Length: 393
Ligand SMILES: Cc1cc2nc3c(=O)[nH]c(=O)nc-3n(C[C@H](O)[C@H](O)[C@H](O)COP(=O)(O)O)c2cc1C
Image (cartoon, rainbow, N blue to C red; front, side):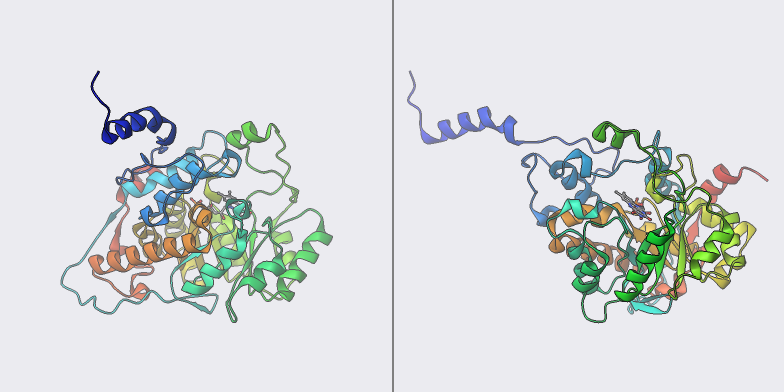
């Protein structure tokens, strides 16, 4: 029998044990940019320095989090969730070469407050479950880079705890739902104001019910879709809620041009175009389609209001597309939540990567100043989307 040397023993042990450690993760159709999961251990955080784009954080979160808190869950057949993720393949950006792009400017005002970047952390319930530091690390990371953070009213930390976690002078807004319990609504609004938040994103797209999220139901074993929100909510009620607070209210979850116009007519300063990351009405349009429709039907909306947008934003070119279509700032829902599995360091890294992508794409586009790009549709070719969405008129 041949004698065994150390190398043979190591090879033998590796062959026996490697199947226990190496993991293969279903990428759920996310673009494959070469992230290798072969050396990952299931349930354990992969090295942070192996994260090079926002989708990497999603794969890492899938490897690490219990299924219940890995919140890709969207409603019904997840048509809108998939559309959010895939609409970008139909977009072409027009890049100009003979331009001076040496001076990059990403600074953005949102409702008059200064931020260093045009993207922000959108409200996400359960965000706290992805990290021991919960929403506090999201607040700190946003503060350090100078981005806006808008915590969900369904956060695991209180309104006050999140406000205190921010840096001195850090501006945060807060999300609220249209609770049918008006005492709760009043109380929340007062606490948000007292804690120093500067505006309220009022989520208007799941009045009466949540979306039916089948994946989530499989985890919880419950059909309960009662959101605790007011099912009789109307435009008049929206105006009445504005009277309950001195903070500006921004209706979040606008998914038709008609609703955008209603908010304009009611005198709101801003709206937030969103399909809630595909978690409420399935088959609802993407932000790109809604912005295009507002341009067609009520272009004055972009002149008279600030418009924010989100859904499926996973890289800088998605942000650029929405800005060129008139959005003032762009929200990120799942990505910061996933990056937060590493706590503040993860969110910092996610921000740093996205900012570097944005600077690079703007230079390659021939427009380094975000203010010049915003609302300038000459940078974006949306004909394929328009043909599919509006048909040939
Ligand atoms: C797990 C999860 C929880 C969310 N919770 C809220 C919420 O409490 N309030 C709200 O207005 N939107 C909520 N959203 C929607 C986000 O604010 C945002 O609109 C959406 O996630 C954007 O799409 P993206 O995840 O593809 O970036 C949630 C989204 C996710 C994925």
